[in-house]
Length: 522
Image: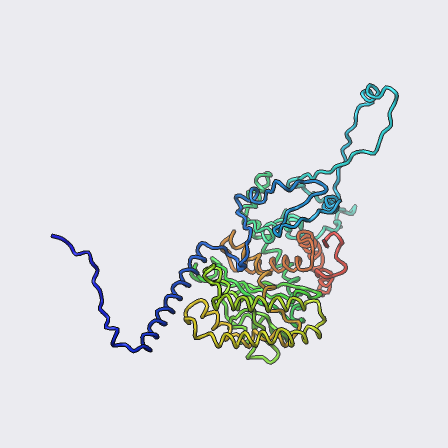
């Protein structure tokens, strides 16, 4: 018995359709084909492609082959070197650069290498003279060192043995604890700057024969924030709310023991003052939800402009208050088009997505040239040079919206831009408003990087503590401070004032205070 391998065919009586109907059907099939092609390309890009919005060549490193990837045999470690950079131009390294790099290190050991006198007399029969030494420098690493500080408190008793007096005892971080400002600051720096989880720090301590459990370190972190450092971040919040412009963003995080199922999402919100503010400050705030109530409470009393992405919670606040205005983010507007261009590669040439991405990029190019102008001049130049491009962009989107499938990435990008048009235009009304919310995204990135290492937070207290510590770290960065030195200074100074009812002393501890020790500033 033989099987007929031919597939059944469907006979379509094409003569029953008019020319217009056939054209409509063909267009519909073309749209479906474009949609499927774009969706498959975007899925492949998300799964296997580079995780960057740049369409240029990015040199990405693996943590396993970083040394090999960075190695360049043509670059030698000499005083005068020529470095090859991607544009194939040669840049001469300035003389004395090594001395400049090492100038901040004050711990210098001088080792003299001399020839014995007897040997010199053998070499130079007729005598000799000593010339200036040949000097070169090397950098030595000294791993973590620990020392015990033993405090002896003098105790005095009267001859009657009834009156006993003790010398003043220095303020402690925690009573009957071995924790010191330097030890606590080192643990904070390792986790919140270098993203090193506490269990890895515990292993590092053990390598040095120091037994400090991760639970103990966690208790210290929470104690430092609740007792001392939260006072500092409260002052940061006061400072931010005085500003005319604030950036805001949020990112999900899992908290294991918050009374909800383990898979429930919590959120870390971040608020940051403008990048060019005199007193830049960053505030992280942990909340269980993404509800609009959280930014409403944080921003209570704020009068100005809030730069955000397209999340509707912020727009809701703007509708509730005449004192609050929202500015949209052009990076988010460009992102869907950039994703399509990356996914389709050469196939994207001439597409709606490529044209949209180019129009936004050129808008950035023109606006970046106005950064150094006075606010008045920037406002005028934006009106005359940038606004026509913005007007043309939205008009072009409206004309081309029907030419792409609505469910495609390009169609979603067009819909996003048109829905956000009111907020994307805000920067044209105020010269202090940037085109995007990259300032907030850069401020929240250290948290997202750290999250890859520790995955989730154990308790609500731990999440609140992390929010305070990230606020301290990122604000110190924004003010160009040495983070470890600043945290150590705070933990050394604040306990001295805990018996005071007035918190005016905190003004002297702010990152912008002129009274901070010089060694804290870079």
